[in-house]
Amino acid sequence: MFTLATWNINSVRLRAQLVCRLLADEAPDILCLQECKSPVDKIPAEVFHALGYHWIVARGQKGYNGVAIISRIPIEDAGDRDYARLGHARHVAARLPGGVVIHNVYVPAGGDEPDRTVNVKFGQKLDFLTDMRDAFHADRPGRSILVGDLNIAPREDDVWNHRQMLKIVSHTPTEVEHLGAAQDAGGWVDVTRKDIPTGPLFSWWSYRARDWAAANRGRRLDHIWATQDISGASHSSRILRDVRGWEGPSDHVPVFARFDLAP
Image (cartoon, rainbow, N blue to C red; front, side):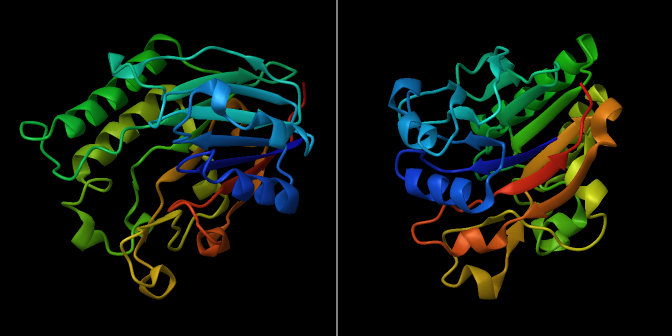
């Protein structure tokens, strides 16, 4: 039995105290972070260790990308994959006692223009998702969990205004189709929407909004998926909206789920 959280922290060194606050207040057993913006040896692991989180598996880059899995349950490094051969630190996996594998993924944001002919970053995003799809087809995962900032809000109620967002990167039909293909290839179940099947859900609010809470122009970019063989063991999903109001916040908030798994 464990509680899992995922959070795009937007610099783990800049916001280490926010991570500590979340660990102290909510006590997830495992916290997956994205956009750490730090080499692995510069991640402030000692402050997490002091709170009982003695294990960390991470991949890092200086000032850019970066993913980490922090745990108070023993975990072992289960490798990484350079999707689309971008040379970015965007994936790391960890194995739990009993064999469940957690994949922590940070999908490219994709820039501002949803057209790969004029925007290289958008093409990279689609290629990343296509490579994920192909990897899952080639080696269909089992007893696995995939979390992270997938940078796509797939459902109409995952954005503040579906019609206005259709041409905005993160909710275009092309992106939603690519994400759906990767999800289907792996047999992944959207745990958050399994537990909360209806109604608007957001995990990101832009820094550009003068009053993010009043405007509430959010998107659900952060996800927890599980393979079908263990998805029934997940429950109690929640999104911690209030974290967006902490001092010096990330523009993302943590997403939680609970898993009750037999070895």
